[in-house]
Image 1 (tube, rainbow, N blue to C red):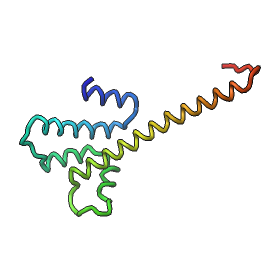
Image 2 (tube, one colour):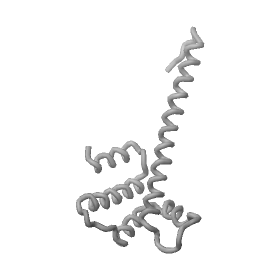
Image 3 (spheres, rainbow, N blue to C red):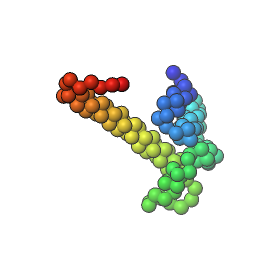
Length: 121
């Protein structure tokens, strides 16, 4: 499965919001340029392109960090907030799956401990 297909799969499963997937695709495009050109350097335009597709709430977080120097957002600042947001969403997805599993196991335990009761679907 290629990167674009993986992104579509992530969208279909609703694991990441579409604006964040667009940002990841833009970052991957930059990664491809770097991988295929050993002399490639990230330009201000490249950083502004990444910034323009990064959701505003993430740009706001990056801009309000305590130790941030004034000026336009830098690539490492954008990359950091995007990666942290993806990790937060990943952990929330894991927590949701574990909570659902625990609930199902608890329900099974209750049902097993009440023999003779007829449960209708």
